[in-house]
Image (cartoon, rainbow, N blue to C red; front, side, top):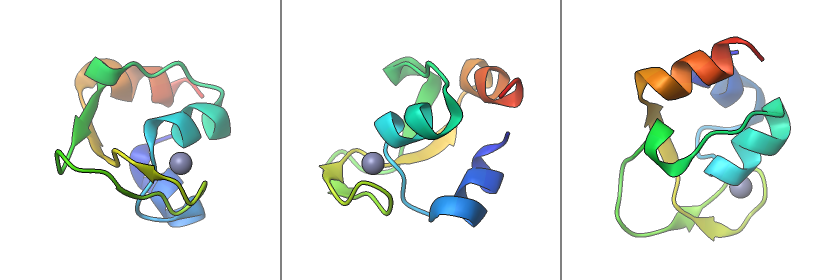
Length: 66
Ligand SMILES: [Zn+2]
């Protein structure tokens, strides 16, 4: 799974918690890149969360196996 596939399937603004539950992944804060310091609404859970805009290599590798 890649972040792009997740975005195509579930929406373009997803929080880390949703990505983890959708992929059964264990992304940690440092695996993710955040676009803004303030929270935005997550397309999946509808909560105001920090939206994951990108993944560091460690995060990409974790998702790749899912
Ligand atoms: Zn969410």
